[in-house]
Structure formats: structure tokens, C-alpha cells
Length: 267
Image 1 (cartoon, rainbow, N blue to C red):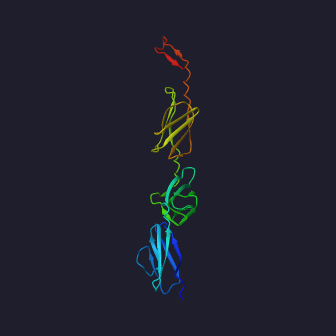
Image 2 (cartoon, helix red, strand yellow; image 1 turned 30 degrees about the vertical axis):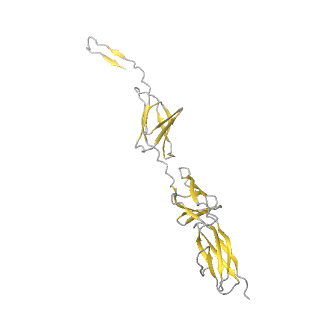
Image 3 (cartoon, rainbow, N blue to C red; image 1 turned 135 degrees about the horizontal axis):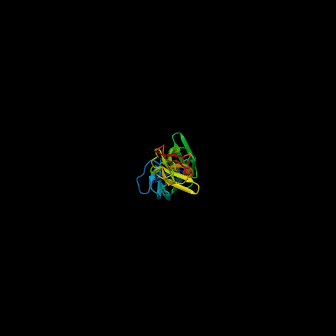
């Protein structure tokens, strides 16, 4: 006699990144070939049911003699929340470092996460989302979760800029004090657009966007220019002391005489 028809396994693949799952049915016993039914659908020869939304299903297997067996409450679990990737922090290069850093943050899906940055043939991977020591360039971003779901960050493109160059040291034209004007002045030749000039002396710090400094007291100064956070080398500038007026002259007069009709002045 034939053995009793039975469903031996109903292997479920839960919904994941595709939002659907599948069921594979295995039967034993009974007579002849099997046909398979999902819920109240038509019987068919395939034991695989795919593209199934999360939920509870009833499986029926029928053999060649018309005998059938049913298994109820075969459940496909729902898809996890969507995997989302965000850029939480970006540190670009500056005048003190030529390397940048980025921090990525994933949410949703199924932890733990795996983060990937790619730039050409360079691929960087970690489980924290924090990447440092990044050379200048454009990086593509991808994260995958424990379920194998992946997402790329099309709205976030990690761009590490090339380190800016410090501006050249300024060239200054100095006007020194005179007997009539007790202060000096300084004018930068060809000032940099957007630059900020700083003149530092004893007890005084002056700034200018034009590179012009007036009413400068005699003394030693240091002149720099900054642009985009970078600072040039310092240039030493000296405003001389006010020149000393010459001593009052001593004059000897020669008066006219009976023989010489004119006088003279000797200093």
C-alpha cells in the first residue's frame, strides 16, 4: 500500500529588499506525481511560489489519485523598514591638512550595517561609517545591512576638495613720516581679492580688506594676508621715527661799509 501523503517541508524566504518572499513545498508519500496549490488558487506542477507579499498562506498538495494534504498558517514575515543612508559629518581639507574625513549614518533595514566608499579603484569598507585620511576626490557611497539589502546615496556625493594654497606674502609700499607728518602709511601692491590683511605692531593689531593702512606710529610691524583660511608668510615692515629738525643756524652778519655798499650773511 502507498504511504500516506504528507507535506514534509514548507521552506519560507521572508520578504526582504524586494518586499516579497517565497515558499518552497516538499511532499512525500501518496501515489504518482504531485500538484501544488497556494490558498484557493489553481493546482500546478511547480512546488515554488514566489513574489509573495508578507502574510499567512495555506498550502495544499494533491497526488495522482486525488488525495490531498493541507498545511495552514505558513507565514512570510514583513519587509524591514527601508534602509536609509545619510551624511552626518564631512571634514574637508584645509591649509593644515591635505586629508579629509566623512561620517555616514544608516537607519532602517536590519543592523549591523556595512559601509563602502569607492573612488575609482579605491574601495574603503567598515562597520562604523566613519572614514578618515581621505585624499582629494569624489567618493560614491553604499551601505548594506544584515539582510543583504543595499542602498546607494544618490543625493549625497562625498567630495574631498584639494587642500587650498596659502597666498603669497604681500608686497608693501611704505611712506615714512616726515617733519610735517608724524605718522607713516602702508599700501599693499596688487592686493588679493577676498583677502584680509593683518598688520601687527607693539600693542596694536590692524586689519584691512584693501591692504591700505594709514596713521601708523613709528615702530616694527608684521604684515600677513589670509584667504580661505590660509595665511601667508609674514613680511616685516618698519615705520621710521619722525626725522629730527636741524639745529637753529648761527648767523654772522657783515654790514655795509663806506667802501662796500652791501652786507653779507655767513652761517
